[in-house]
Image 1 (spheres, helix red, strand yellow):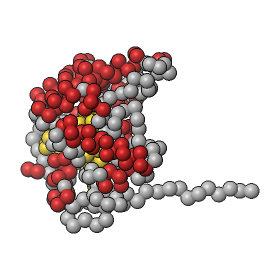
Image 2 (cartoon, rainbow, N blue to C red):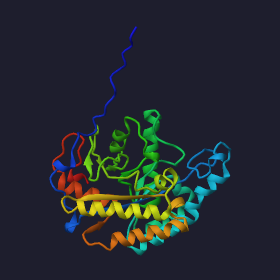
Image 3 (tube, helix red, strand yellow):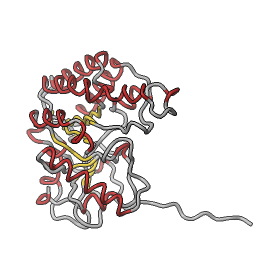
Image 4 (cartoon, rainbow, N blue to C red):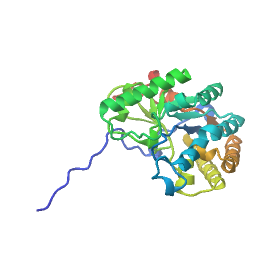
Length: 309
């Protein structure tokens, strides 16, 4: 007997919107591109597999080779990245595992001195958000927000899940907890409003391609290749931005981009970008504020209002 499958599940978080049909978006002072740079500062559990450079030891417990390779990021890589970004007056929007606050408070101290913004990134990068019961997921979000607020002195307004993972209820729980923007949905070059059960939510453009994890571990690019990719991405967005403003995200992991043979090329990419006029170097919160204030008015269900930005 022929079996019929259930109807495929769809989401109702936003409606389709072709960028060519939208009114022109204008950034402050006529900028063509709003640039935000997102270092993922993470803690990894010692007895769990995670990102690896050598596959042959990933089944070992502990996997000292790959664990210590990742650990380079918080010991060395982040400090090199801070120097490079400060040189070009770029304030990071950190995707922060809340466990970092406990294990590496020196990084929090330095980031605060630089005026960096902090957004939630789960508890650690060995725990994704996908199959937890609702109460457990709600508690994870609550713990992350409270821990980051206490450690950094500012309440996170944004969220990027570990590995960009969600349950069907994540956006509703995040909005109810006071998160105003998420970077999990990598489908646009402009912010857009998302429907949530209560509160408000904005999707901020993030990238799985202008991302050192994809470039180095999935595509096998060199540091020079990745820097050229960044320059190419910016050049096209800068040209497109003459018609309507774009957002460019550069998504980084200190254990990757912080390696000397890569960081030198990344610095040259930043030099290229910042040599242009009509760009707005901003944090995620600044971009979300501007968009909400100037392009969202009285909200319908699940929209961000300017007054709530």
